[in-house]
Image (cartoon, rainbow, N blue to C red; front, side):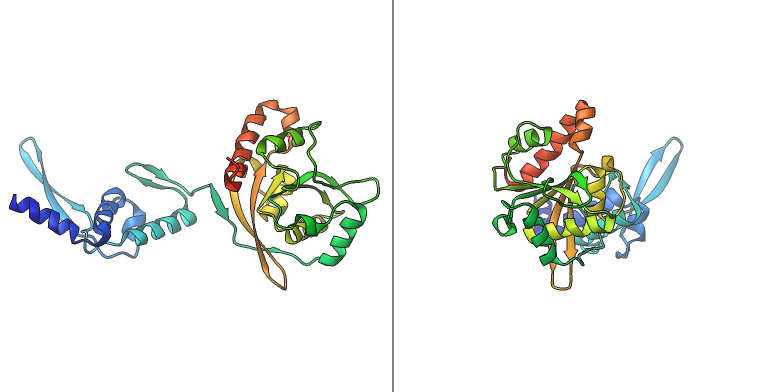
Length: 284
C-alpha cells in the first residue's frame, strides 16, 4: 500500500499531468525520425529483456522520462511543424496528417484598385444597391458568372431570394435571410481586373464568409491554382492587404451550380459543404 501511495504522490507532483503526456509522446512517436531528430532532450533509455528459446536477448527501448522529455505543447508544436513541412507522420495509432478544416496561405492578396471608383461604378448600374446597407454582411457569394464590364442591361449583384434557379434554391435552406447575403458575378476583361474587383467588393462589404463558386472564382481568392476537388468545403483564412490596412476573411470554396446541374450526384457533396458554412455562421 505504501508503494501505491508513493506512486500516486509521484504522479501528482508532475504539474498539470504534463509528465504523463511527455512520457507517452515518446511511447507513440519514439520510433519516428521526426521525434528522434527533433531538438528535444535525449530520452531516457529503458532496459528490458526478451525470453527466446535457449537464449536471452536484452533490448533497449528509448523512451523519454516524464521529467526530462519535452512538454506536451513542445511536442504538438514540433509535430505540427513537421507535418506542415514534410507531410504525414506515422504513429502507432495511424498516420497524422495536416488538418484540412482550416488552411492559411502565406501570401496576402494585394488590393491596388481605386475603391471609390469601383463603388461608384457598381452603384451606378445597380441603383437599388448600396454598399453601406450591406457592410458586415453575413455571406458574399462570388463567381456565379463572368462578364467583361457592367452595363444597364446586366445585373451582377443580387440580394433577393430566387427560387427559380439552383443557386437560389441552395441559399434558402442555408437559413440566410434577405439582407444577410450578396451574390456577385466576376467582372473584368483581364484576370487582374477580375481579382481587383473581387477584392474591392470584399473590402467594402467585410463579409463574415466568402463562398467561391467553382474553380475559377476559387483560384482568384485562393491565390494559386489548385484542384477544387482537393479544397472544396475547406475553411480557408485569407487576408487582403492595401496601403491602409489588412482585412481578413474566411473563404469556403464549393462546386459551381452549373456543374451540379450537369452532374446531380454532386449535389449532396455541395450541400455538405454548405452545411459547413452554416455551422461556421451559427446557422446549424
